[in-house]
View 1: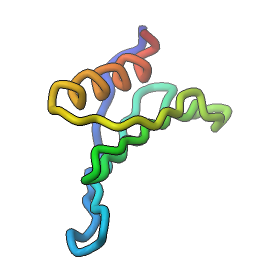
View 2: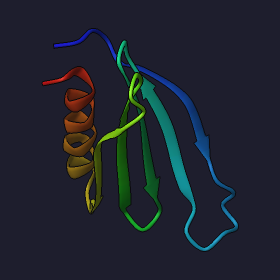
View 3: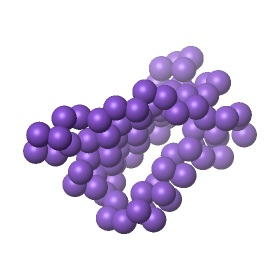
View 4: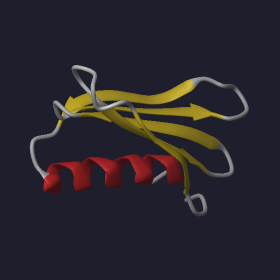
Length: 83
């Protein structure tokens, strides 16, 4: 298991577009990650290996509750740590 995952670069899109989003980047010793959540509940999770720059995790899903959101982000963080 790897060390801490740092969350950085939290951004939101303008609210006057048809499907606004919130995005944040995550990083640790060997991985870079990005999570994007749109107002429709759609989410994208992506993790890149820093050395090879290859995508090692990429998943799209739709969440419909805060509990689903929490579980999905927790799973992403675990993947970042190598769990």
